[in-house]
Length: 199
Image (cartoon, rainbow, N blue to C red; front, side):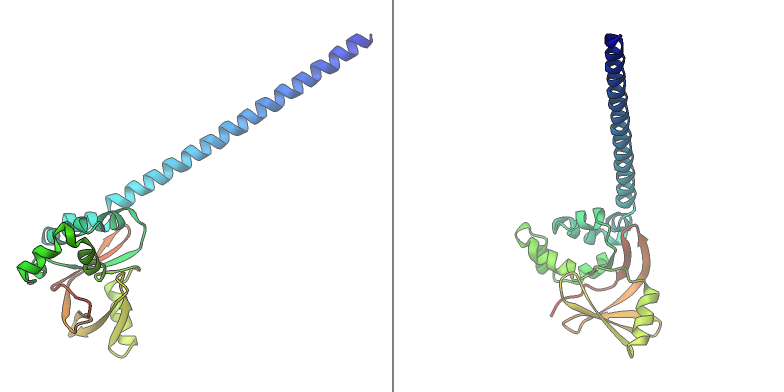
């Protein structure tokens, strides 16, 4: 009789242990499935971000081919393609880049001058999303001029010229926004008619 009770108790113990193992296995499997689904969702989100990013927008715009090439040369393409931002890019057109002295432009695009090119391009990028409406409102709210910082750590001042938004750089030169609010998944692009320079 004692043996039967012992066998019964031992069997119950084994059964409970098996149940516990099954439960742990199920929990582990569920946790793995949740993690897999989370990783897939993040990967899909990243694909959507990259597929509609600022860099893709510049690539799709014929008159921004020089900027697109310059971003690649300066190793900024990955930042503006993969990072969430948001960013605002004041994008000089090909015609704007053509206004730069050819020798200077060739020098900038030389592999040895990557840091200088990167610095120039970062002066055209703001680590925030600023639409043209927001720029106009800020200009009006700040007595006709709105100054903000760029990724290069230097300031640009925005002002109105009639209905156009004009940017003044550190050297006092100006560039006009010719096409505003090209929306991207990680920010916004405004095309400008001149390359702006730090002081």
